[in-house]
Image 1 (cartoon, helix red, strand yellow):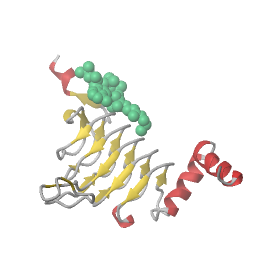
Image 2 (cartoon, protein in one colour):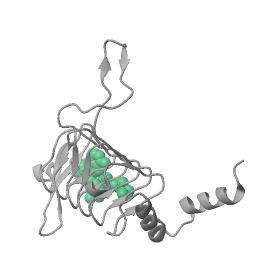
Image 3 (tube, protein in one colour):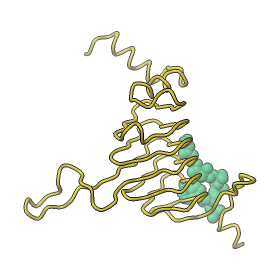
Image 4 (tube, protein in one colour):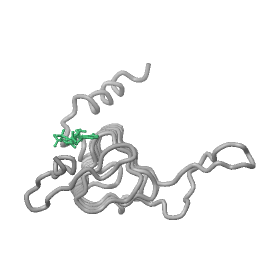
Length: 176
Ligand SMILES: CC(C)(COP(=O)(O)OP(=O)(O)OC[C@H]1O[C@@H](n2cnc3c(N)ncnc32)[C@H](O)[C@@H]1OP(=O)(O)O)[C@@H](O)C(=O)NCCC(=O)NCCS
């Protein structure tokens, strides 16, 4: 068993903590502090700090890896994966390369003001427009326009947000 005090501190920091204070402090520790960013427990952020804007919330157990740009006021819900770069199959070895390698433009952009709900995956090369709502559990494999509502695997545009009223306009409802 690890040192009891350390164990208690880690458990409290992830379970009992004051969300605002600890999430701001975590942002500071990973180099994106001082601009209203919040980082929740378990999030792994492996992109350059200058690629992340201000006022962002990076949720529980989020994984960000590679050339990923995150616009201002982006919310990333729990268990999302935003990873640029893929493993490549190498016929010489007969397995996938251990390191991810760039393949064309694999960079990812999350447009300002977007919300990725829980368990969303964004694949390499995708550029999300601004103020997208990506519904829970979606896998986004293609770039999207501004104010899109995306859902499903692979994600399709199922609606749009009216930027004036804030209303969600679902395409399936329009057809009825
Ligand atoms: C996107 C969301 C906010 C929409 O909620 P809402 O406005 O109440 O919308 P509805 O539940 O009425 O759904 C509207 C349509 O989208 C579909 N839809 C909603 N969420 C969906 C999802 N995750 N995947 C696929 N389709 C979805 C519904 O089936 C419905 O389609 P229909 O009208 O053709 O039957 C909600 O579905 C969602 O994903 N919430 C995520 C919550 C979350 O992850 N919270 C963690 C905090 S970050």
